[in-house]
Length: 339
Image (cartoon, rainbow, N blue to C red):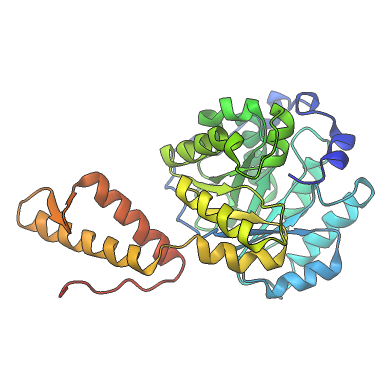
């Protein structure tokens, strides 16, 4: 994430975060299997500093699928308490942005997360908690235990409006703990997010325009997300004034399998959201594959050919994924029965 100097001054390196006592994460409500959370579009996740009243007000008109009110890196140490109060009040009012409303809390182990969670979970219009610098499943167990304790009954595990959790992957250790992180608190966690700047700092990578140095962690996050039915959200484009570079980075992320991307400036939102949707051609092809496969199954057949390409179960799965993303983004699915 951004603001590394401030963040490190506050909490030190990843390895020095305060440990969470086991007693704080007992009575876990997520140990019982629950239905997976319904898909939610997150093409653009726009960060808004929680300490800036002007930007909070401006966020009301945002078209971003997800607006993330930040209590972490964009907020100075001396403004943490004020930001917490401003965001909680904002998410308790009637005027709200159209998309998902998330809050990025301070990292577990900073001694700030407890007050963050107690405050924001009282806000009736909070949808999602973004947990930064997740190092292990235990961090998410802790957050889930606080949701059970502080959220209203209708937002608890297993409820239709259960509080969702996005886990930010920002370190080498987190990459090696991906399976445990992805399967922690399944009644709340529904996305993994890649925080490139902190990851590069932790591993010692040299940032390049090609992003080649981050291919492994990005691919690992997408693979883990797919394996456990989660979304994958790609890195921030820090060159926010360079539209060409942003488009290229969006294209790259979509090719790798990401569902959306983080944004640090409102001007990035339209470009990102137009990039992370299937094209008209992709939607038509997917609809044809689904239609033809349905007909083939009714006739007791298996794989079939479409435009000289063999269509079988894996190709059908890809087509269904395209249609799911199109519907989530509000795009029309054409009737291809007569084509």
